Each structure stands twice: as structure tokens, then as C-alpha cells.
Length: 422
View 1 (cartoon, rainbow, N blue to C red):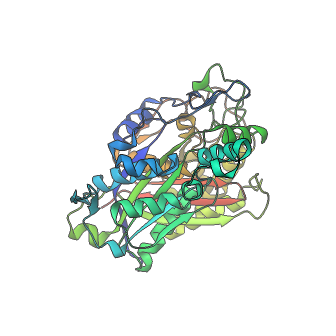
View 2: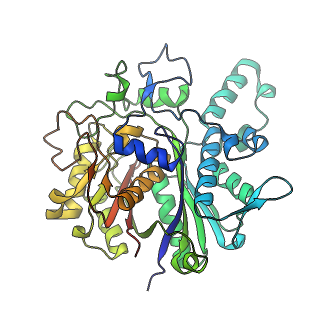
């Protein structure tokens, strides 16, 4: 019998707010987090919009000295982890160094973060200094600031987590796969608890320029940024780059009950496949992605009809949205037409590895608060995308189980399933 794993804490930094409560209210309101890029001068760019994290001050959650030694994606991860651990009731009083350590066995508490790109702003700045003035002018901490594992490593150091500290790098699926890997760590008995999720911060010239050259980003609605991310709409023209982090605290049910924890949901299942098809495009039939959904449902011990809500990858790109529709139909069969499906990327933009954590939290909020987040800007539905995408306004109803899927460059497919806890 599989060990039951539950969610006891949530934390996030996002384009829709820097707390779970603010994020929930903005999801229900169908608010767009997309706007003009403020992080750098976009004069030479075709793309001038993004879903930025606003009003972010890392010192609200972590020591200023620690924050100065972190890239932005690591600051996001640390802030979200602090919120999640606080929510879970696992943070003790501050020690003599001002650090708040966890109130549990640190050697049996792991951390798994998904990150696709690392410290892009550090890479950009250091390359500029290298080319302009030579290697002696580069940032001394260039390497430890830029590498993707530094989010997990820094969070481990801040909170004294001494179990496994992993970084999952599977492009846009990284955050979802990190959650799945944490689930497996707890089920295997290697950990009693884990801090897991995804984080990303690549709204910098190098990141936007790279995706722009790939012709992946929306360019048609830079004068009306709130309308640019429009998954499943016939007039979509690319995704909007976002940033942020979403983090969960996971524990065995036994451990959570023993300490009297507030249990938010059961983390019931995880499924993963690889298309083995193309470096950027999903496999056209949707069969491989559909198999990831089927694997997640089987892992959760659920039938397709047991799921009421599916949070789609839903990037607003020409290829993804009809392919994902076929994927959902492949997995859910006749139930696909009765399923509520939405893309919260219509509001948050595509936060790359951060998406998996943020969208998992959206599923848990949907279960707990009984609402289906909308797909905003769905004004002219694509005939090839013919499911119920909860257009434009949130809907309300009972949700016993929800799933979230992520698809990544290289053909990575990951799906997680959450259930109402009872």
C-alpha cells in the first residue's frame, strides 16, 4: 500500500500577487498579471510585454545579507518556501543568527526545486563585463549565482534542511516534475517531508530575446498587454513570458496528523512521459502527453470521471493548444467533454519552471474553495480546441479531485493529481 502524502503548506511569488490569498482572489477575478516590461529597456525588441512579479522585497521573508548573495530565481524560491513552511506551522523561533529553522527532523526533510534556466540576469551581466572589460571585472559569485541548483541549496541552508536537495531541470515541466520527485522521495521512505516546487526569473534581455528569436512569444498585442495571453483562442499568437515561484510542503499523512497539522489536500498521483519526438514541438497526436495523464490517474487510483478540473499547460501558442486538447481527449475519453479545463497562464503568463508550482497551488485552491479558475481572453474559440475551458469568468462548484499538466521543450510531460483530503 502506498504511503499517503498530504500538502500542509503553500507559498508563492507570482504576477498575480506575492501571497496565496492574493493569488486566489486574482484567479477568481480573472485578473491579468501581464503588462509592459519594466525590468529593462525594450526599445530594440519586438516583444515589450511580460508577466512580471511586482512589489517584491525578499527581505520580507529572508535576511537581506542572504538575499544579496542570490539570483532573482533563488530569491523567489526562498520567499515562497518561507511562506509555505510558515503556513505548515514548521518554522521555529529565530536563532542567534536570526534564522528560523524547521521544527522537524532536518535529516528526513528534503527539498526539490524545478528550474529551467538559472540566474539569467547574472549570466547576462557577467558576459557583458567579460566582453567589455575582461574576466577580472566579472562578478566574483557568477558561477554560484547562476547555476540552477542554487535555489534548492540556498533554501536548504536558510532553513537547515539536511535531507536530499535536488534540482529538476526538464524545461517547462521542471516544477511539476519536482513535485513528482518529492512525492516519490516521501513514498520511498527516504524523507518524511519535503519542500518542493518550481521557480524561474528570466525576464531579462537575454531571455526575452532568445524566446523572441524562437518566434514563441506574442507580439501582436503589445499595446494591450492584458489581452495578449489567450490560450485556446483562434487569434492567439504566442505565449507571454512570466516569472515566479510556487512551493508546497509535503508530508506523510501519519506525520502530519501526529503533529496536528492543517492538511490542505492529498497529493495523490504523478505521471511522466517523454515524447522522444522534437526539441521544441509536442508530439502532434497528443498520445504521449495523454499517457502521462493516464499514468498520474493510475498512480492516484482514480478513474477519468473522478477528476472535475484540469489545469492545462495552455501556453497560447499555435501548436500547443490543439495538441493539448487531443492529449486531454486521449486520456479522459468521453469524460473530456464534461471536464472543466482552464489555463491560468492566461493570467500569469508562462512562468517556465515556476508554472508547475503555481498551477499546483491553483488546483489545491480550486478544490478547497470550490471554484474553477477561468481562461481569460477566450473570445474567438479555435474550432480545434473544443473543450470547456471556463471562458473569461470563474465558475463555482464542488471539486473532489484536480490535475495539472506541464509540457516542456524536449518532449517532457508531467502531470500531478490532488484530491480533497478526508
